[in-house]
Image (cartoon, rainbow, N blue to C red):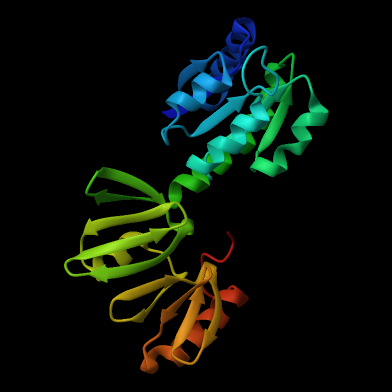
Length: 241
C-alpha cells in the first residue's frame, strides 16, 4: 500500500482525485492510503517523511501557494515524489525547481491520469528498491542508499552519513555493506566505506566525497581508482541512477 497526500483547498477536486486513484487501483491492482489537506500550510505543519507520493495544488485561497510549500517540503524530504495538480499548466512547468515528477491539469480525466500514474508507480518501485531500514537510536529509519555519502565506524556502531543528516546503528561495517548490497560503495579504509556516486577526486591518500575530504588506506588507493573507473564506465552495476 502506498501512502499518498492530496493537498488542495477544493473538496470537489480532492474527491475527483481520489476517484482517479480508485481507477488506477482497479487497473493496476495497487492500493493507496490517502490523507487530505485543505491548505498548504496545514500540510507543512503535519508533514513528515511518511508519504510515497504527494499531489499538490499550486493556487490556494488562503496561506502560502503550492510552489512555496514544495520548496519548504524539499528541505524535509528531498526525494518524495511530487505531482502538481493545477489549472495553471504554465506555472507547473516551473516544477523542475522543486524536482516535481510531473503535473496534471484540472479537470482531471481518469485515462490521462492513469498514464501519468504508470510513470509515477514505476519511479516509486525503483525508489523502494534502494531503500534500506536501519535501527537508529530514535527508532527505525528508512534511507535511500543513493543519498548516503559514506559509512563510518564508531566503536560497535556504524554511522550512515547522508545528505539529510547522520544516523547511527549498532552493526558491523561488513553487515552494513551487505545490507546496502550496492556495488557503488567501496571500502577505502578499515572503518570507512564511501559512495562512489558522490566521489569527485582521488589524490594521494585521500578522496573527496560530496565535498568532504576522507582518508584512503595507502594499500587501497590503486584499487579505489580501478573501482571508480569501472563505476564510471558502467562495468560495475548500479551505475544507472
